[in-house]
Every structure is written in C-alpha cells, then in structure tokens.
Image (cartoon, rainbow, N blue to C red; front, side, top):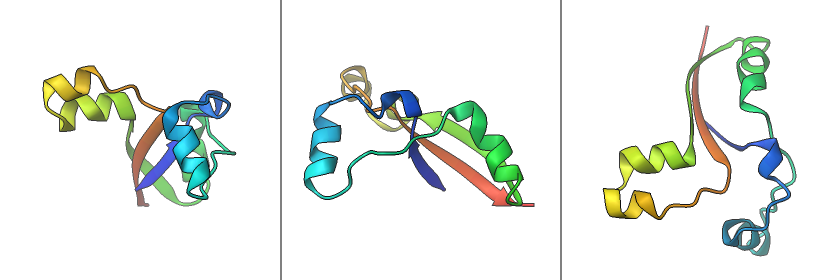
Length: 82
C-alpha cells in the first residue's frame, strides 16, 4: 500500500498540510496519478487500485462525515509484485 499526494496539491495550505508540517512531515513531493502505474511496473509491481481520499471517505465514513470531508489531495494505491 502506498499513500501519496497528487503533485498539484503540494502547494495548497489546508489545515492538513499545516498540521503535517508542524509534526515534521511537510508535503514536498507528489506524483500525478497517471504516472504511478508505469513507475510501479518498472519496479516489478502491478497497480491494483488507486483512489483519492475523498472517494475513500465516501466508502469508509458515514454519509454525514463524508459530505464534509475536504481531502488534502491524498491518494491510496494498492500494488502487488508481479
């Protein structure tokens, strides 16, 4: 499993970005989701799924929570060795 931030979200300054920076995990690097399958493939992995944090919130949280969830541009990808 891989958690990453989409590149175009790195410069955003949401509360999640501020908190991450304050606890020593500043968001400095990101990928474009479309680049991930090729990157993984070159390293011997197959991408099984890749979802943004807002889509995952709709699946994992109660509807009232998911409606108000403003993601930080994060994604969670699942891959396996080939």
